[in-house]
Image (cartoon, rainbow, N blue to C red; front, side, top):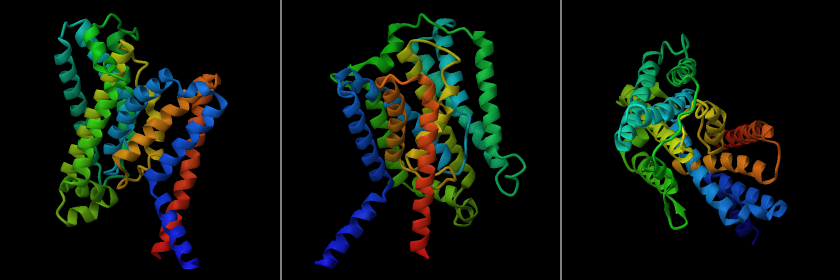
Length: 333
């Protein structure tokens, strides 16, 4: 009897140690606790809001995941979202582009920005990594892209966008928002390539140890190009979703997302050191980050507390991840 009980508890610990499982349980506990304090949390309107913005934040975290898995701490996505949001509105409003052409142009621009980041990362990869770390370059790139957005708009928001642009993110399929459908599609594509195609293990191997990856025949530079290119492509798509939902092109959209996206990635179990992460974990991280914002609104807490709460959540998961890795290392030894 004791043996069966021990086996059961051991199996339960293994299940709870899975990142996606313990994060899911955490989300359920958080939402239940908030419901106790304020039953409004589970109203249809609020749940729809959570589904929409949780999906958008999750798409942003999925884009960051592709940067982070091959060990590229990219801090440019705030600038990428900013410039893509502004240019999409500019193309439609000032240059008279059809919506479809503006969207395709922005996605291409996003992809090319990612390729630029990857080229820099490849150039300064070992043995030159410590001369100019890639996160310094990407942070600088974020400032440049945001500054360029301010120059072309003179820091004024762009309004008057057509309804066809708003439909990109505001269309509903019954109770299901279209942004959630986009999220499911992106998760499905990433899951297929990360777990059912050679691209996946090559990408994870690049993040774990690019030197060893080279020795086993993996084209590390090509993997970074593809990962950063498509990661930035997804961020550009997220910029379009935010701009179309808010019906505005503004330089205020993008830079404030830096901390939430990084926090969402870490909460979702995506290692900032590379080589670890999953699409489902990224989705959990994205929804958790937006839930924090939503909870602050529902409980009528001052918005200034948002960064404090996100920072505390990040600290909690840093400690939790350190403890988990320490236990795993002890088991392996």
